[in-house]
Structure formats: structure tokens, C-alpha cells
Length: 250
Image (cartoon, rainbow, N blue to C red):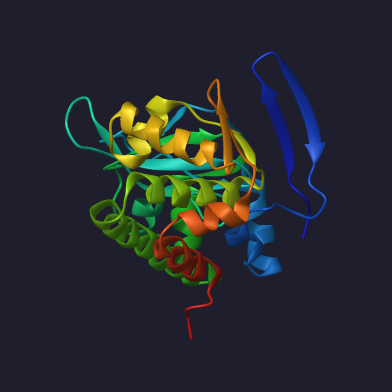
């Protein structure tokens, strides 16, 4: 399989580089070589900048996105001012799944939560490849089940577990997808992720900081002790992680 050329955009500069072996996105990597090669000319490198919208509610889905790094958060509106995260997608998945399910418009807001790189595919090319009946639809069905499991388990977590446990779970899930213990995160963003006020987020973060688990300063979080962070979370993290890695599937 050929490699993918990415253009890495920092708002003020551009750097071109090649991936060492294809692309980090696991869905594309799982495709047979001949199907991937057929799709490759239609894949467009697309940078993910923190805070940028990928979709807004009601918008026509013109592209689907396959992250190679970074994270895209899926948010649902509670009211005009409040948003709640219902799922996060990194290099294990794709954004634009409604299109695969026959829905042309996004019901949720999709926003970049962690900067990185992706490739995107126009809706027409994506639909054409899915209609061929090759391996891509099979791969996407598996991912759809995994994302549904994440969303349903997160709903349980919101209902029954403390803000501190939910914050620990969310930090671990973010770390898994970004591949780094250090990432940018504001209190406003976290309040949307966890569905609580900024004061509650701050209390939970201060508690984890006081126990030497994280550093939290000026909109950045650094995980100091992953083992203790894992102990601080609930069982939801392990269940979601097992589903994503396929260890719960027969």
C-alpha cells in the first residue's frame, strides 16, 4: 500500500511529511490492500485544530473523517447553551457514521478536542465504496457497534458515578487516543464533556492533583500517575476499552 502525504498546519507554518507505514487510522489499516489502493486517490489530508467544528447539528455531511491522531468529540445539545459529550473518536474510528447508516445530515456537533491529523473522503466517494460490498462496510459495522457501546456505557457512567470517576475515565480515554500524557484542556470544554458546572470540574481536578495523579494548569492537563488514575475511575473505562480493543467479542 502507498503512504499518505499529510500537510501539518500550524496556523503560521506548513510542514509536509510522510507517514512511516501508511496511515495510523485503524479502520483504513484494516482494509485489504486492493480496496485501500482504490480509495487512496480520493483521500485528502485534513488537519485537526483544537476547537474547530467538523459538523454542526443539521449540517449536510459532505465528508467523512478518519483521524490519524488527535480526537474529535461528538456533542449533543441539552438546550441552547448547554452541550453534553456523547462520544469521542480517535484513530480507532471515523466521524460521519450517520452517512454510512443512510442519514445525510448530522444530528450532533462534532468538534476537535485534541489537535492532530486526519484524512477525509467526500460523501459521494465514501458511499460508492460502501456500495461495492467490499470489506469497508464490514469494518464500519464493527466500529458502529463499538461506538454504540461507548455511548451507552457513558450514559450509565453519567447517571451512577461521581464527577471524579467520570473525569478519570475521560482522561484515560483521551490519553489512549492521543497517545500522550500531556494535552490541552479548558474547564469550559471539560464541563461540556462531563455535563457539570465548571466548579464541579475544578473540584474534581484539584482532588486528582492533590493526590499526585495529574497536573492541571493554564488549560493543560498532564497525567502523572496512570496507575492511580486507573484506580480512581469506575469500571466503565475497562468495559469501553475492552470493547474498543475487541477483547469482549467472540
